[in-house]
Length: 154
Image (cartoon, rainbow, N blue to C red; front, side, top):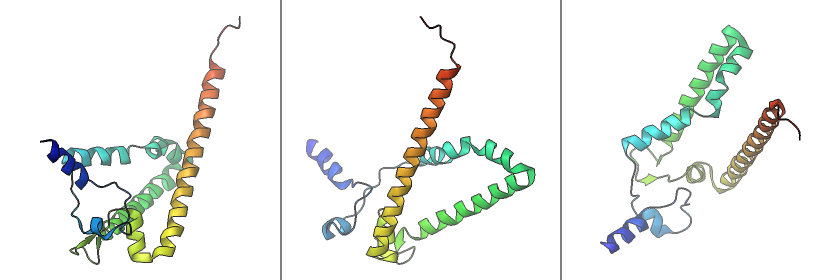
């Protein structure tokens, strides 16, 4: 029983493993542990995020005509992006033998190692910028909420 748990842990791979690490790992079949409920949970957390919280304000700023129009444009861009990522999941075609285990691995397969490095730089800069934006927004929200408190000074 103890050995089965260790073997199961060995079969599970981290999300960001690259195919260049070892050929032995890339030939090993990927053990899938997700269920329909975890997929639904990931979809819900992806859809109901910080972007949706500001959607009403954005539509109000754009107006009745441009707001819904841009919502449809962004929905089309999202559908296109999802279809492209799904097509890149297996290489060289959708019934192909090789799976791209991460986004960076798919970029390397299709665009090469140099563009993978450039893409990684852009992704990390984007994550860094998002973290800074969240910190600034949280700090200004805390400052605003503390300034509205009427605490007696003693």
